[in-house]
Length: 351
Image (cartoon, rainbow, N blue to C red):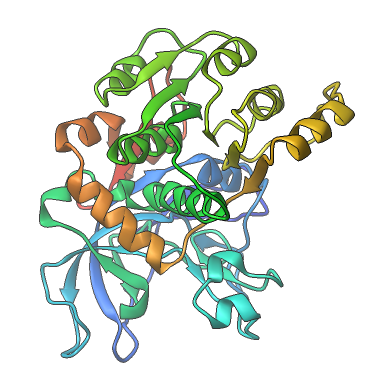
């Protein structure tokens, strides 16, 4: 079969290769790959900036934003042939740490977790793949064209879950959310905010292309002014930060409403210094009971929450989040950014 492979130690090694067909272990599902979402982590791995291949060989099957259809399932697995499924990305560490032992492998304390398509386990970027039933989630059959959005939706489902948990340390009825960044994570965070009945605002630097309309079609408000201008005017109760841009991060933190919660989902590059009034920041956080939290990855509860959110969403809107689809044979196009890109998808089921 064909698979998208990469040597995480060597930039420019991304290619489509013939690899052995998978043989499911007892109880595993055999799945025909349908599509694969491409994200910033995949591009970092392709540039040899991140990632680990499985022990004993240099190459890794890339891809963690999966979508497939079950070909073979064991009796009692909870799955049947034809089911639309996604595979969970992370696996708990073998020790395990206290969090992993309780199913919270997204909160692994010792860093010995593994991840499909990222860290020491082959990913889902192949025409056929296997997955343990405990790490597969069924999707509504109507989501066949957009189900690869499941994994990024789990990221924001977790972010919203963490915001709720932190907020409920005291009376908590947020009204307004500011999402910074209108890429896939930001748009899906806005979707979940709209589903919660909040007054949703999205900030991004672009003024044309598909992003403004996608935001407005959620019933949300789109902004392209500087973060200080927008956030100081809105005074949001919640900020979901999805850019990783240092000036945006600190601008959002500075201008929340009292008891504001800022959830950081974007990973910032190192090496850039910003002038920060640390004393003023500390004073604001303490006197207003504000909170800043980081959030990454997701556990099985978040996958289930994401599946429910996607099933409730407008399918046409989800389909428009996917701005390009390219076949596996033209994978390089998916890794070359175009001006109006939001989410780029590689199809795996072409003849």
